[in-house]
Length: 311
Image 1 (cartoon, one colour):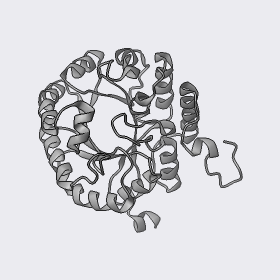
Image 2 (cartoon, helix red, strand yellow):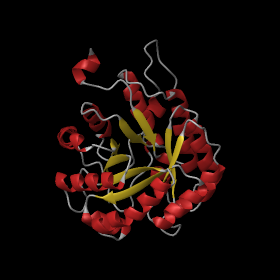
Image 3 (cartoon, rainbow, N blue to C red):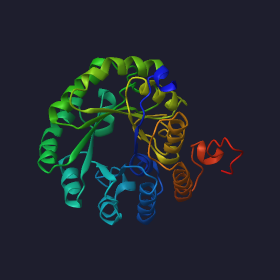
Image 4 (tube, rainbow, N blue to C red):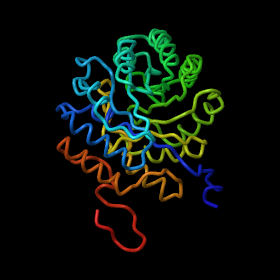
């Protein structure tokens, strides 16, 4: 009855982005062995999709200078898709050489943010994706396209929906398989999410929609609930709430994967993820970056209806 009243899906896919989007914001280099250990632990939880690194230039993000080594050394599970971000054709070449089967492209819905992030206009970014997409499709590599600052920009404020629609259309014309709308600085609220997704949902004629929420203002889970009611069932999370954005002032981490899984499972929505193992991953992530993380469930423990549980 609850699912019918709230129009909730029976199952949801959670994409773990902590090893890439989370760790890239850490100033102190995380040793490669620890990155690999985190990825392999995450793969043991039942997560089927993990974004593990980015083939960006080492000078741009020193934290991810070991991308080739990470990809080649992980003991991959056949049922898990390990994806990487690629910023340009050189990044794609490196990814293909390493044997990557899924890549992510990214462009901002805000001209100002795109200029600060990649020093290009939106139009130039999209133009540069043409050769990347052509080569990726020829190599049977699956593609995900991010639309950054889709719900608001720290420099430009509100983003006109038409800008997001334009990029969705351009991505689909390139053959992108999935499009993730990013709330990069946590500026969205549930009503905004509901209205925007109600407008955009019919536009996804070829690519699947996904959402990527940051918890900057504590609204990520509420925004996800609003999106669930608009028939969205692919969501990103970062273990422990890792993350941020170096070109978005005030951005804090992504929604914590363990908090997201907890909410979904408590509402009867299947994820296929073992929450106990995920909590252990969150604690390990805190150990390797040497600080407490923002996730709630790793501290409070799961809800236990038969009595208190030790976190």
